[in-house]
Image (cartoon, rainbow, N blue to C red; front, side):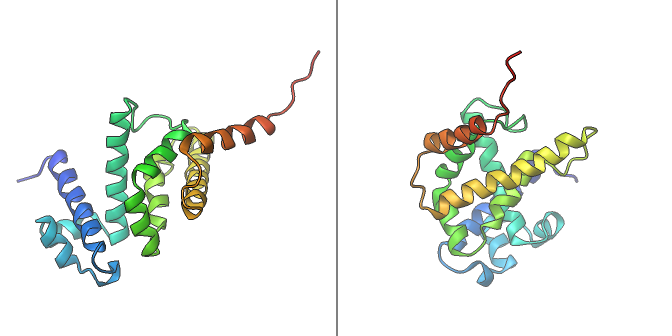
Amino acid sequence: MRRSTATTEYLKECMGTALLELMQTKPIEKISIEEMTAKADVGRSTYFRYFKSKDEVLSFKIHCLWKRFCEAQARPADGPQDDTRMFFQFSLSLRPINDLLYAAGHQNVLLEAYMQILDPSRQQSNIKTYYLNNFLAYGVFGLVNAWILRGYQETPEEMERVIQGWMEKNQPEQDET
């Protein structure tokens, strides 16, 4: 019997939740697949069917949290992501998870999640969009990473103003003709 997509997504997310809970008590390298799947009440084969690494489990979980965050903001999770403040607000809402990932040296999970959110791997007919989405994923990660490493000193609104200031400063001047 085939599972529905909703059931599969739920089971995959349960593994992410279980892994995050286990990471609070022991290093990720010491957490076995068996331990994680048992805590999630999921069979080991489900893990191996959908994931190649624990980092993939974590980035999937973050992507699920992004979808919920967007729903709460009444914004489409899979639409154009042009609101930089949202990424900072989302990251701030994940502070305990981010702290766990950074302490474990697995901050690359955030980049993987942003790659899923912005979906640059999807082959698009417009090559400019493809490269722009890659650029945005790495750029957003770089900014959020620096912000986290600074200890979230600025608010999401302040971060948005910093970015807007760069954009305005680097706009080409219009000819007055």
